[in-house]
Amino acid sequence: EKGFDPMGMTDLIPVYWMREAELKHGRVAMLATVGWMATDLGLRFPAEKFQVSSLDAHNIMVENGTFRVALALIGVIELYGAFLLNEGWLEGGMRDAGDFFIGKQFLPKDADKANEMRLKELENGRLAMIAFGGIVTQAQVFGTTWPFF
Image (tube, rainbow, N blue to C red):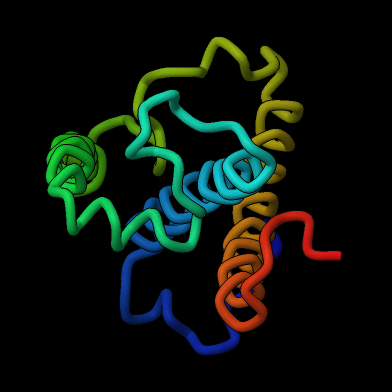
C-alpha cells in the first residue's frame, strides 16, 4: 500500500475497519460492473421476470417482491462479515481484513507475490467502484446500454 490518506481518516477510524470496508466495496463493485455489462449484452436468467434492463432491475424487483430474497441473502452475508470483523479486530484474532477464509489457496505461496496480488485486488476494486458509478450515470443520463459507444 502506498499510504495515501490526505484527509487523515485513519486518525479517526481504525485502519483495519477501513481496509475491511474498502475490500468489501471493491469486490461488490467488481461483481456489479461485470454483472451490468453481462446483462446489457444479453446474458439473463431464462424466466420472464428477469427480462428487464439493468437500470430498471432494482425498481422492478422491489415492485414484484423478489428483492426481499436478495436483501435476505445480503443480510446473511453481512452478519457473517460482522462476526468475522468482530473476531479479527475486536477480539484480536489472526484474520486479515477482507479475509472470509475462502480463496486463499489461489494466492501465490511466496509472501511478496501474495502481497502483490492483494494490492492488485485493492486497486482493481478502487477502479471498479469508479467504473460502476460511471456506468450507472451513463445509463441513467443518456438511456443507453453497454457498450456505450
